[in-house]
Amino acid sequence: MKVNKVIAREEYLKNNNLAKSISDASWYELTRQLEYKSKWNGRNYIKIDTFYASSRLCFSCGYKNTNVKDLKVRDWICHFCNTKHDRDINAAKNIVAEGLRQVV
Image (tube, rainbow, N blue to C red; front, top):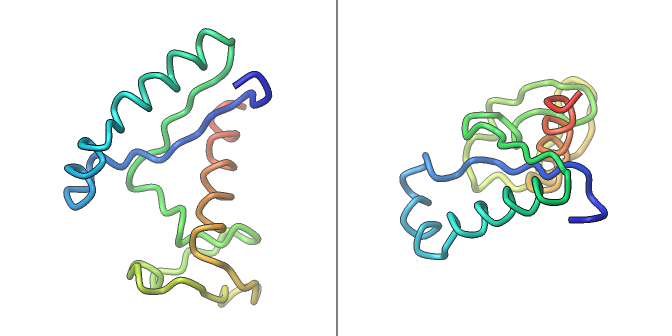
């Protein structure tokens, strides 16, 4: 918390498939503590909308690949700039970038 100036997270509880398991795992308490500790330490806490296309946006060029909606697709190549993406790493980069965009 003292190192990072911005905490960005994607909102999951609107996804009905994940809502119960996340709630059971005390997701609410974790996010509440993150938000509280962020404010306590003078940091920004940004919530990224559930429907933000973090997995589908090419981090390199911004192209939106609609063929990546299926969770079984773990890797994909951007049709515009030919960059190869790991779904989760690409999503994480996009979430950080969106959080920083909202702060600035």
